[in-house]
Amino acid sequence: IGQPVSRFYVDQTVLEDILARLSRGDTLRDYPARLRCRDGSIRHFLIDSNAWFESGEWIHTRCFLRDITDSHQAQVALKNNEERLGAILQAAQVGTWEWDLTLNKFDWSPNTAEIHGFIPGTLGETLETFLERIHGEDRELVEQTLLQAKDHSHQMRFEYRLNVRSDQEERWYEGVAHRLSDLEGQPSRVVGICRDITKQKRAEFALRQKDRLTAVGTLAAGLAHEINNPLSALLTSAGVAGRLLDQLDCPDRVGECLELIQSEAERIRQIVKNVACFAKQGSSPKSLCHAKDIAERAGQRIRAYADMQNVHLEYDLEGDLPPIVANATEIEQVLINLVSNAIEASQEGQTVSLRISRDCETLRISVVDQGHGMTSTDLDRLFDPFYTRKQDMAGTGLGLSIVHRLVADHGGKIEVQSSLNDGTNMTVILPIAE
Image (cartoon, rainbow, N blue to C red; front, top):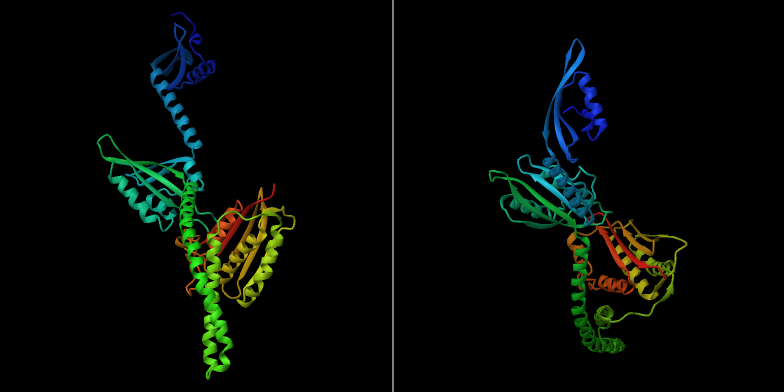
């Protein structure tokens, strides 16, 4: 009592604003302010106040204070916790979302949109619009899981992919959904998190591939050894029989049969060669070489086949490329295999492109075709031993398995982008020489 009011206000600008408003005849409702108490502590208040005027002269004010310090501190603590949780989720690359069951509306955190590669606000506001973003092969599973999460109180996990353009990399995501209820115990919303698990899926695939290659490699080595002996006898006998044709009455017919034996035996020989190459253990000797030279040699060897199929083969090779440490013969084998596959997948008149460019500390060697492309099922099994998409039984199903092993032996990797009826881009990524 008897003290100037300015003594109690922590923020003088707040007091000045209050006095200015009251002098204009304004009525204050729930105006926030910090006041200093007798013991020196600072507390938070909401102020209701107005001024009394007579003949235009300010006579006095009436002021009511409500102490909201406890609720203010709780709000500050809640905000700090939310910011801390947001920072943790951001660092862990985990997004959050909420599905309002009453409004059928999804609310996505900005981090969630970023993880999925979308601009915030474009991921889908309803279940139906979100499902349109999901890859066709995963859509039914995601829908069923979310609907089950709405009807059950336990957590539901699911994995999914999004629809992407043919030039975009396919990525995998994991979602976790949990239902919450209102005060009356009725389901009100489903909340969840999501994260990118592409690296994990690739690691799992690589591990499965390694296990399969180990098992099949052991089988292939034995198979090649067992076939080689009778194959040699078959080829030798066919050759001897050919020399005896002059002693027979129907040399033309016998000759056709022998030619068939010869060609099929050669095909078996090539299969055995591929199997032996696939089963080969250990790393090959490597030296400094230039990918551009290797690509040009591979192109020369495969050009006649491209011309025979009426497919145009074009090159886009950067001129000044650093060398790589590689086995030139093996990398040439890789490129011939990839270009041959691209030619076989192409229609007459289409183009197959062979491109080489530098990307930081790696070289990217791409074989791009305009052919019929591949389904996601084909992509999942592309490097599996003995898996082939060729319907005429011309392939052994080992070519890409060998390519995969050779590239891995060089410390590289293969990226594949393809969709049905939209062509394929196979890119071999190799480290440049230090």
